[in-house]
Image (cartoon, rainbow, N blue to C red; front, side, top):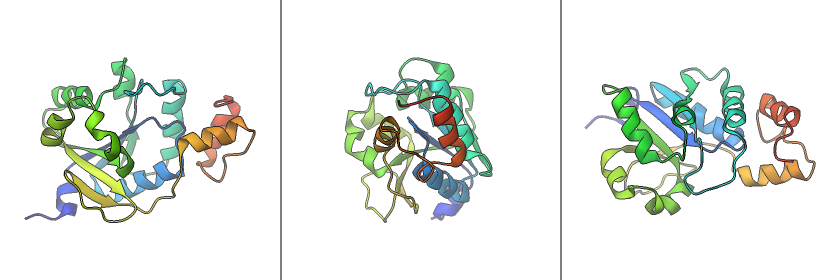
Length: 189
């Protein structure tokens, strides 16, 4: 049986999410993934599958670019942004397989996402079809996928948006360039 590192070095980790805003917890996960995988694609969703209100996709994309600058083997993907509509992982998987038939992808989700996973479109099929990497702060026993333990600060994008709307500064929670972008573009006010 091959080790996780042998498995990961041959794969691209697709780290999708709202990134509303991109914060230090996201950055810690990206760095952890970059140490393990051949490449990391940070993929902001276009429209959230559960209807969450989001900052415009162009702003979330730019925050991801700013937040991941300097992290080797990492890029920010416009794949869901260019696909338009609601971003369902099931649809993204199908489109990625059509566009990159010889590439091996692993989809990254947080342990918090496991709570709602059964509500995802084609959830049961996804469990069988896709390699999932479940990122957690401590080792976790999983029903499906691989567990990757990453040391990341416990941050909530919801709480960060509330801080901004109440006039507080984000510099201690997000990369400096992201904090400046949020301030300059008056996001979350």
